[in-house]
Length: 169
Image (cartoon, rainbow, N blue to C red; front, side, top):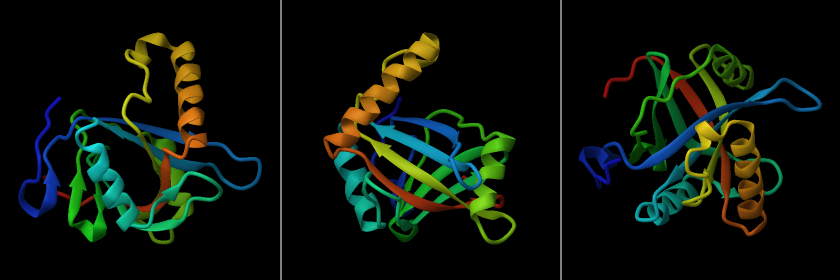
C-alpha cells in the first residue's frame, strides 16, 4: 500500500486504506448502502479532520447528511470526496460495487445517477488482519471491534451522496 500525500487538487493517490461495501437491512424501510473506510495511522488524523469539516459526527444515532460524495464509475468506487471536493480519498485496490449496493444507494437518493450511502470511518487496526480468509469468524471479530471503537467514540459516520458515472482518474 502506498502512503502518498496530497497530489493536485488535494487528492490522495492511493492512500493506504481498507474499504468495504455493505447493504444494511433495517426493520422498517428499504435497505441502505454502507461504505466502511479505514486508513493507516499516518493519515487518520487528516481524514478525521476532513470528515468533520464535511459534516460527519460521532457514530451515535442517525448519521447526518454531509457534503461528502462517493464517486462510482465503471462498476467500482473511484473516490470519497470530502470538504466540498477539496480532499479526495481513493482506495489502493479496486472496490467493486454490487447491483444490490447500487440499488440500495439509489433507493435513498432523489435523481437517477445520484443516490446516498452511509459512510463509516473507523480508526486504524479496526479490521482484523486477513479478514477475508477468516470468513464468518473474521466478520464477528470485526463487528466486535467496530462496536468497541464506536462505544469509545472513535467511529465517525455521515450520509454521503453517491454519484454514478462520468468520472475520470
